[in-house]
Length: 306
Image 1: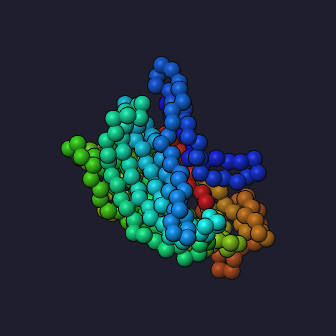
Image 2 (image 1 turned 120 degrees about the vertical axis):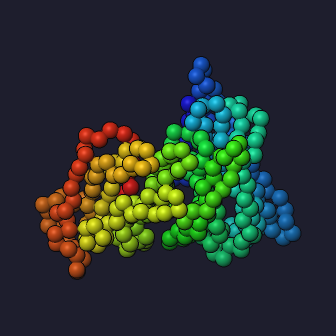
Image 3 (image 1 turned 180 degrees about the vertical axis):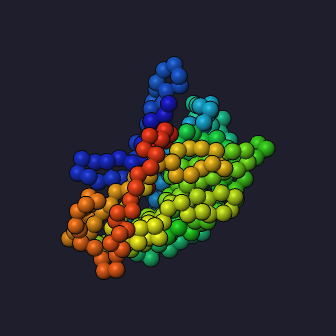
């Protein structure tokens, strides 16, 4: 068992990356704290400063025999007062170790081109890597996505599926994946469940359709499309409950939707029988085609709400 939260929620509501050096690990007999190889250095660079940071995260393998590590290392050129970012060089790296963090085996490494930080904040204009390992531990695959977090909206540029085949890790290109909800594998087939959220920002809501997509064998199938299914652009919906099944049988097992209407500057839950403001052109019947099926389904659930 391994406990290493990705983020920290402060009492004032501020959420940031977890940069604690230690994490807790249980080896089946006893618990102990282990250290992450976190790096943060600052060195002079002409009239500026070069800041190098790396905050790797680790995950258990699905058989519990070793650790998989994922790291986004960046070297950022900053002004002398460290207030503005000028350019950045990023490298994504993943490796495997034993349960003590030793016996390192490299898996993959990808360097991004040097990027000029146009807005003095590199994450607003420069690409970086995000990664998704299966929830039950890393086995023979994981997903890496190249994206730009952005200032008012994110841009997803492409994804790769890393797979272990005949003792070697190889990567294959995928369409850009915004958010992986779950995965399933059967033999050589890997299926991924993707969520695409509302792209609205800064007071604009429901600017695009929430979608749930199934990616398998280089093909994409839409399992849920908010606008096509409900014709209700003035309301938001959430999709819940998927059960892990063999790839050939993967389908929505139970559906639950939460409707939201925009009231002032807030998103407020709406009851099915309530009268709420809607945008012009909204389908008046769309709000009542929300159904719940398979509520007793067993298996893991995912919330695809934004």
